[in-house]
Length: 589
Image (cartoon, rainbow, N blue to C red):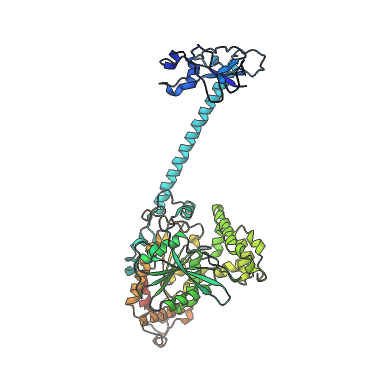
């Protein structure tokens, strides 16, 4: 059976097909036309409404059933006949209560009359009103939410538009780093989580190509060193024989493929630097060939890589930059090497410093998403493809549990702390933080962090220790997120904001180093160590002219004033000593 729909609506004037009295037929759904010779404006509207000059009003549709006529087939709608005559539907009135409703379902032997129900008409009107109210409420709600989001974005932008806070810079270095003193965030992307996620998902891949070399460790492990190929970098400058060598260490489970690492390779090569990326074991496509992995406090791989670079480029100064966990590992290395560090300068960006505080932050609020994703990523990248490497050599690690880890703490409990001999995961976090190493740094170090970093909290930055060390300079921005720093100058999908500032700072420090004789640099280290020793214990402070005379005087300005033997009126020592060092004045400006 086919359903024929007759429509009752006011006549549609001016229609050529209606005036000619021709039949109109709804082809869609197998709908037959009305009786021959009976022009009907409603049926014509359904059949060829697209040809009319104005759209008709809404109409009511009633259902009929058709059966094949004599000598006709189901495939021939024109040969069908109606089982019952069609009763024309009355025209709808303007009064809502007199609107004709659809005929109620009935069997094929019943009457085909139209039924009018004021109650159903009223319910239909209420339904339509309810839809309009719902649409209106949705529009108002959407407008309110959009206005609130816009206001929040404006307020957040004004807060993060504040110039970065800098400390520890000498005037001659700071004036050569204009990019570090002006952070221009993008309005609408100043929320910490929004900026972090946006930069991770939408930062453009520059497409840098690498040439990979491998370093084999004594334990059988393999380190992958990637060198960018100039043909994949626009405006790359040829590197001189004595050009600086920049080594970059990426964050947890990252590598040379990360866009922020590629952007730093571009910035270094456009400055004429030699550049490379050290991929931690199992990261950046590097294979795992031994059961030893990497950790936040394990620095032996960095030491081996730097010594290798020193052998390859004996005439070039070495500099390094670590991002996120790579920054923590780099500062740990600087503290262990002290004055013997072969690096000329180093940079740490988005460093968590205090791992206990960082892990506590990952367990709160929205940051738990980062914790979960990082745990699943390192489990799938480091453990799952290399289960055969660890079989029989787990060192107490529980690999099956590590594969099911849903947080970094769980993974470190099952694998990391056991591989490196810690009794608990808390002990691992406490002893692997780089905040302990800041006082032992003896090379120029730049620390760049964001105050709203959801992974590396600003409270974990050891500002007291940093301010006490003349070799450390800091840049703290109000916004930036973690590995974000989306800026207007670099574009929505461009490089992180600190990239060019980091290269400017390294160049400025190397220029200062070239102008400073090597002898004075060694004396600089000795002077600062002497002053630190004097500040540690009160008993170490010399109180007599003879004791002062035994101090090294190179680079110091000593002022000794002797009082009477009974001491001053305020009970002070009879002899006061004032020390100042050219090391501090030159580093701190």
